[in-house]
Image (cartoon, rainbow, N blue to C red):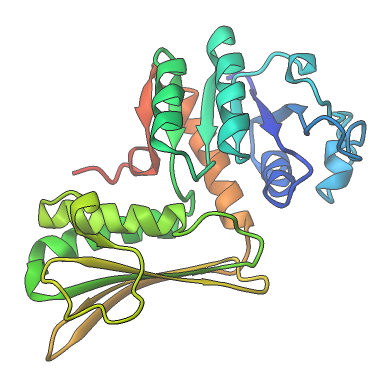
Length: 269
């Protein structure tokens, strides 16, 4: 079997460096290209050196068209950049693993249109543990129903720009799916002032931003007599990078379609 060739975009960022490192650690996977935004001081630097591994001979470029031919692109950048990368992927018949969050509804529709004939894995979180937690949350919601009040808590580092996090929203969607409702109809994203008593069936969200918190997520099912909690705490971003490379490997054997980590991990019922 030939080696899987991967391009990492945004390779000088925190996640980008982790992704490069994860690619170098994975068997049968090689880095074919690495990019960074135009004007970045890291353009021209060796991707391996930036990631703290051996020199790879792959230098960061600011034009994705300068990258060597590859099978899969891994993208943990921004919605605008991911939309641009989607055109590159579609034109070359590649697969794409998307970890970018914060898409507006119209941006997400554009992304789906551009990648309509491509194999895609898109997930809010690439941790194996988080995806198992999503599965458990949906099952718990199905069993417990509206007799238990539901809350989603999340905490991240001070540099994160979107809230609630994509993972928190994924937890909310899993919880809503277990109850057979649409999250948009029951979500409560803020509480301030005289809010009145809690409305039955709602799903509340709370957010913390500070320091260097990698990621903490918790789903709570609260009744008068007991509380059930399903939580996940990440201590190192490598857990997300390794999951993304695992998804890239899996995606290389799939036909065109839109998948997530539940598919990669075979957690679908």
